Image 1 (tube, rainbow, N blue to C red):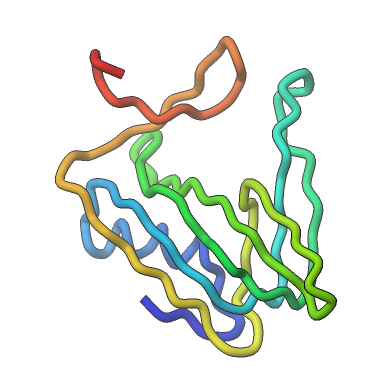
Image 2: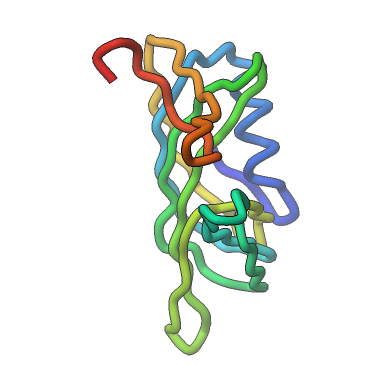
Length: 132
């Protein structure tokens, strides 16, 4: 898929999962971020500590598309750099496409994958069945 300036990447991926009835998928991508928010998970607090940036170039976007409680739940990580070639990255909490575009390659999988909250760590974990 190719997203354009102003598109909300997480919302577009969620809509794609519903519209195309995608059971699960792996993805990779790159492009321009007008606004991007990364999060670092604080296990003690049980929440992400966010940090936002403007006008970066996403050099690597990778993740999985699964479901939780009947709703799409994209899980993405990214690395991005600025005009000074300084890079940041981590768990992706929000990504709005900037000037230019965002190219995302989505490879669908045949099995429906679900996420569930692991109470011992307070985070969503991909469920792969009995074999784990």
